[in-house]
Image 1 (spheres, helix red, strand yellow):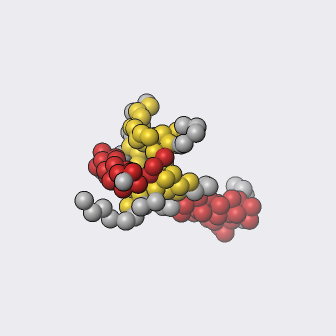
Image 2 (tube, one colour):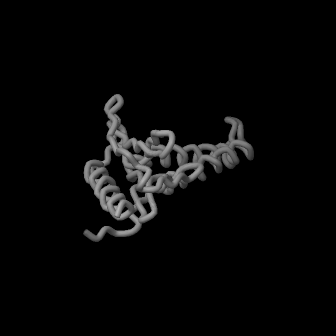
Image 3 (cartoon, one colour):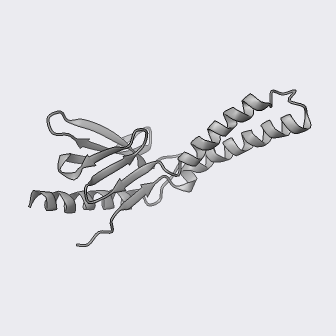
Length: 150
């Protein structure tokens, strides 16, 4: 079986939309207050700078996710974590309060649990392809752990 390399699993637009739109709305209100109302409601340089920081965070939601490579599973977070396929013991789906996330059990001497930021699905951020993404993740793991074992 040939699998594409790498495979990137990201948050969907519907999962990022609320945060991104709130940040954009915040910036509109801050700049509108600063330019049209002389900052009487608190809109000014410091508030705009805080908004700029939020804009960077909103843009970073596009980067957050998981990549599947030949070497291992790469968790795109701060800091980035690479988990070699031969250290992965289990990939499970946890359901807490209706939010499903993927948890990877890995390690050599000490077993660790890493909750992936993507794929995920829940009431406020549905991912219609969640089950398919989990299937691809498990298929990729099975194919690559077999290569490393051989």
